[in-house]
Length: 309
Image (cartoon, rainbow, N blue to C red; front, side):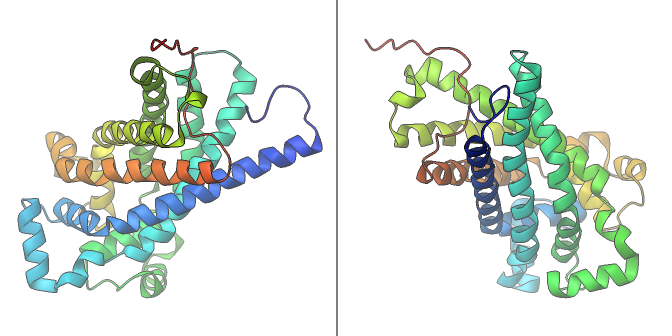
């Protein structure tokens, strides 16, 4: 385990920093590339959230955007997604591992779910401060074609019109979306990995092949992403509304969208979007760890009994 109790040697500290560095780089690459890959789905989601009267279904949104603006419309905001979610992923995965080690050392053998929740929440605060400026540009570029073409012209335009506040207008609802998502996602992933090895694989992780370990990573990642999507969907709708000035405050956004719509609007496409994205992120992340000579992610909290013997 990285970061054991008590003092550590210089070499151990170097190894620890190297481990966190690999996790940070892995998080950046996995999050940035996967989010770019699903940009068309994200464009559909944002437009359905911001213009619910015009776009009442995934199919109508897709065909209308293609007819009115052409195929390029489906790739609006890709740069904001690559850099924004790349920085977020680096903080989310790298700092999660750091805080998990830190809190494990401080709290000892306490409830592991609490350690997962606290570690992911701590990491996500830093991750969202890094993401927020890019998200501000991305959402407006995707829903308002006249605003800007991308990051290059969007950043100076937003700063000129709203100042530094414009980049962090949605920080609170963004945290409201991503904090519960991250806490549920990481905890669900950890418990899913534990469950799969103890009840499905029936073998210790180190006794499984790399392919089997990555299969567990994919399955646990999909479950974690889908569960997290439902929990964070209300805040996701609020973020889109605020950034596109459909409401001037958090309370007005909730009233305008409606309580039921907070949970249901764009939920199917969000699950379609987030589930595969989180699965691919965990797969890429763990593949980078494996290629670096590290074990795949996820704790096994109890000894696995090999029932195949």
